[in-house]
Length: 115
Image (cartoon, rainbow, N blue to C red; front, side, top):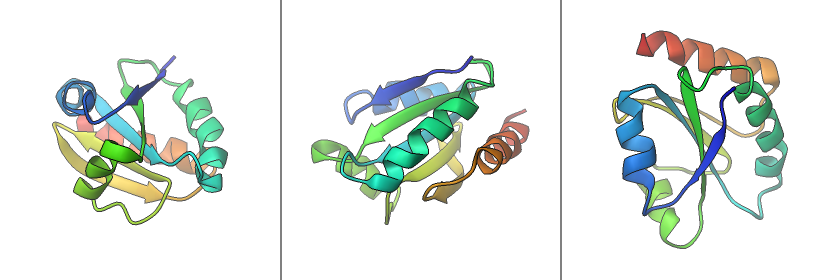
């Protein structure tokens, strides 16, 4: 079962970039005021729970205050934005609320890139 780890600008290097050399990293960039973000969260967590933590790590970044620098680094234009990273590099992304099947396909497709 995979879990979701909250990250910030202070923990981003260690918990996202460094860890993406060990497994697929999926970063959910959202905002507290964003209704689509609130709708996506249970779906992405539910799908993540279907996988082993060794397969990929789900992380969440609240895009506020200093954390907006990370959203800017990834040229995020709207929330939620979900980014898959391997070895510190973005390999794929999606925006907005998506179905369980879409999220599962997104993860599977990017897991295949890591192997």
